[in-house]
Amino acid sequence: MTSKISKIHVDRDLCIGAAPCVTVAPGVFQLDDENKAIVVDATGADDDTILLAAQSCPVQAIVLFDEQGNQIYPEV
Image: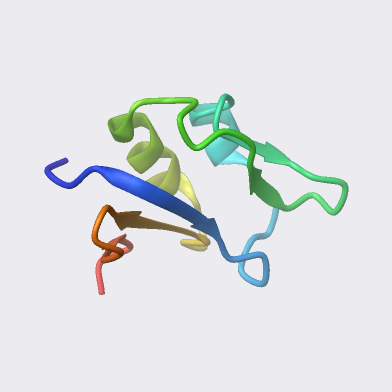
């Protein structure tokens, strides 16, 4: 990964609670009372692990942004 992740957004409308993000990066993601992923600590893993967690989402509900606010995953 070349860009540093500065913001992690979970699209709650897309999230189905499959939870691979929690499995890959439990320090960053958890499921809330509605079984939707939430970010508990954006610095809870390194950028490569966070990217892997986002890529593991079957519905691409995790959106990553760089320091300039550009969306870096999923690619637009």
